[in-house]
Length: 158
Image 1 (spheres, one colour):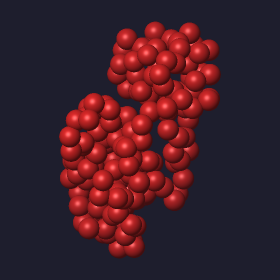
Image 2 (cartoon, rainbow, N blue to C red):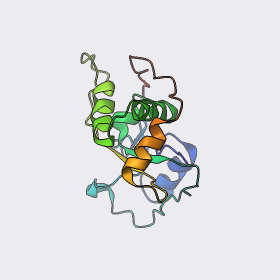
Image 3 (cartoon, rainbow, N blue to C red):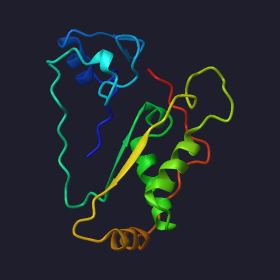
Image 4 (cartoon, one colour):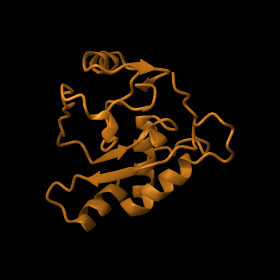
C-alpha cells in the first residue's frame, strides 16, 4: 500500500510541474522535501493537484502516516518492521510513535539536515471488527520481524 511522496519520483515531479510548481534540489519549489502534505498552506494554491488514492486490503494491519523527518531516516519497510517489532513486544501505538521518533533523531548535528528535522508520525490500527485489546493481542502473537539497524541508515535526499 506504500508509495513515498517525494519530489524526486518521476510521477510526482511531473505532477508538480504540471500544476505550476517546480522541483529544485529534490524539494517542491525549493522548500518542501515531500510532494504531498497536510498543512503547508503556502503550497496549496495549486488546485489542479489530484489526490493519490490507495486501497486498504484485508491483509493490511496498520497504516503509518509520517513526515519526511521519518522517511528520510528509514525506508517504508524499516518503519513497518520497527512498528511490528514493537507491537510484538506489547508496546502501545502512542509509545511506538515516540520511540520511532527517538530512533530517527540524529545523535549529533552534522549539518546534513538528516535526523535534525521536525517529525510527525501517526499509526492507525485496522481493527477489522476486533476490539483494540484483541488487535494488540493479535499483533503481539505474530513472529516479530528483525528490528532495523540500531543506527538508522541516513538516506540523503537526491
